Image (cartoon, rainbow, N blue to C red; front, side, top):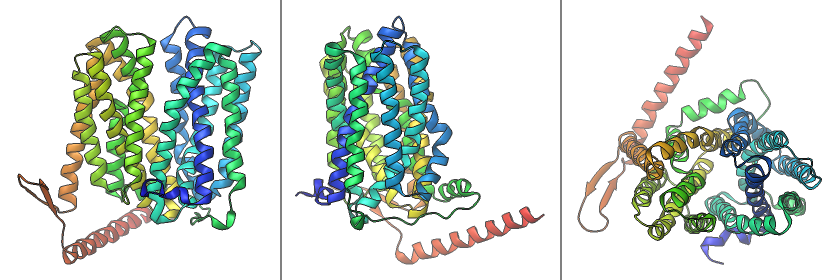
Length: 446
């Protein structure tokens, strides 16, 4: 088996990958059916109602992520995931029953969307960090990338299947099928070989552990830079459903079929990016920053595309660079964080990554409505370029890198500090940390 699929050699990871793929297909089916139900059945094509539903589903990530990360650090990931899968299945069954029996109302969708967001917020950190229980550290980068591959493969399959089923049998049956897909993940978790798991160090129960996670992040400038870069790009650049809809309908005068094709092409680029990431043995900060810059360039070309078909073609590098950035950031955060803090750190990272969606989407939508659809993409491109350049400047300064440029390959050579220089800087930084802690302790006592 090639390096791209190396983690699939591991029995427990194969089970998880297969179960997650089935469940992810169901999740994408539910997203499409839920939006269709709100837009065409429960309201007179109200985009505001669809936006409220989306915001309610993502709001818990802002409210609960830090606490959910603490749960992931304290409790067994496998047990926690079993309960979150059951919870999501029950909520899916509730929406299916209300819809099939003809009793569903808009407020039902709002409540269930928020409840699903609560369970998903708890599920997220445990799901992300569970990968480290399934594979040895040497395979973690590959396993994280394959998780993204599973998610994007489902993104290719789910919406199309949902569209066919909605037309054939209605949204209620789509919700029921989604609820049943959680059985695949539950079965995978149940069938895993406990003796082959790699359980991580658990955090002991004591006060102030959420604040401890925040302090850990603040003392890790590399993690802060990754989170800021991904947060800015996610808020203003990763609004593909919104920007593609405006470009297809308003800018190019196309219908629903052409709009759906745009999503599939972006997903093809995303899938290629995830597979490319699976071949890398290590994710670094510079790869995250470089991918963010490349995304800014690709999105800029995407915004300038003069015809629908050129716009379609430029969607491929947009999806590729976006997934390269996301997958590299995810892997870099996980592999460089101490195991007992990993759940809280991933929760804070996801809070920024996913929690910026309800903030950035209305801004991008307003720009597209008042300035034109192309500017809704351009603002994300400009933001990505600015934040990546700023992050690169910080990396060069903070890590004391020396850059030299030349006309032949490699065009840029990077000189790192010598071991003696790095050791001296580490001693100086440690001394500063000790002094800062002493000052903080004296302030607290006084």
